[in-house]
Length: 187
Image (cartoon, rainbow, N blue to C red; front, side, top):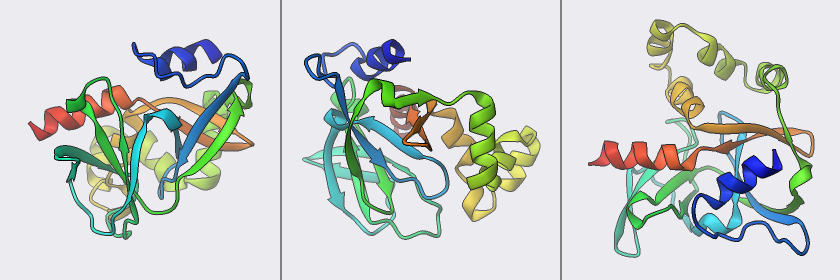
């Protein structure tokens, strides 16, 4: 797990997210209203801006950045989190409700969540999400018309790894896949 996460967090660039001298990883926990919180390296966060209107593109320092929503359509957003990517074109912003929290953890503190643990945690805390993820494709299309289920299947497609942090389920997103999707969609 440690090697996979270290390789993933570096993503062909020396982001320097894992301190070799202390063995600590500084992460940001980004709240998601209808699914497990997302965990990203703090070094990838370019800015956290107050923003209370739902938008699809954000002008950040003169650059148009596509926005991905981590909240249902009927929730009022509070912040935009702008994330770095491999190229300027692939930067993205996450629209959230709540506060981003920062943690310094040992890589060993992030435990892989096997599929059984992942399913059990979803069943306990996100039963609607679990039902949407396990539904046949035609049911997902039908369910996606409900306000709180609209992005479930899409969010599931961008999970790199479910992990347990301090006994709570979180996910490490596949930001590369997500940013390429959003940029292609925006083009």
